[in-house]
Each structure stands twice: as C-alpha cells, then as structure tokens.
Length: 125
Image 1 (tube, rainbow, N blue to C red):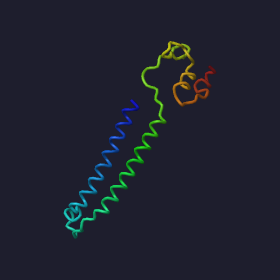
Image 2 (cartoon, one colour):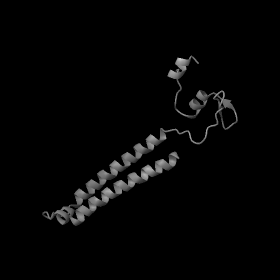
Image 3 (cartoon, one colour):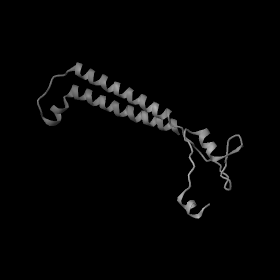
Image 4 (cartoon, one colour):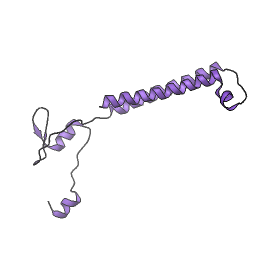
C-alpha cells in the first residue's frame, strides 16, 4: 500500500512539473500572451527558457527526494490484526500471543503510554 501511494505521489508530481515545463516552452515558442491577449509580440529567448526549465527540474528532483524521504519514515500496520477479545493480546505471524503494547512497539515507531480513560475513571475499573 505504501509503495503504491509513493508511486502515485511521484507520478502526479512528475506530471505536474512536466505540464509546467510544457507551458514554459509553449509560451516561449508560440508567445501565448500575444496570441491569447492580443498583446505585443516578444522575441524567442532560448536562454530564459532553458534557465526556467533547469529551475523546474531542480525543484522536481528536490520535491521527489523529499517525498521519498517522507515515505521512508512511514511505517504502516496493514491488514487484520488478530486480538484476543478477553485479554487483548495480539497474535503475531509466528503464532505467539503478545501484549498489545509490545506488538505496537515491535511493528511500528509508535510508543505506548498508559492512562485511564474518563469512563473507567468514573466506574473505577
């Protein structure tokens, strides 16, 4: 699931940057303000277009690296987790029953803290 989300994120990022670069080049070649707004025509400036494209590519690779980094920090618990309805222990893939807190700490970056919920505090359980 995580890899699929990462691929979708990177593909949508690439598509967005590709469309921006395409507009930059189309604007330079066809002088879009001149065509669409009947403004004064400007000459083609290839250097400006190349610099803008290089900036967009730099931003793309920076954002792509950041997305990959963020996804590397995510650890997902997926699927069904078998939990005992009486003692709340969790069955591991090796068929051992371990406390819920131990399972969460071993399979994620989360840490458990113990508190008493308001309902249990009132009833004294």
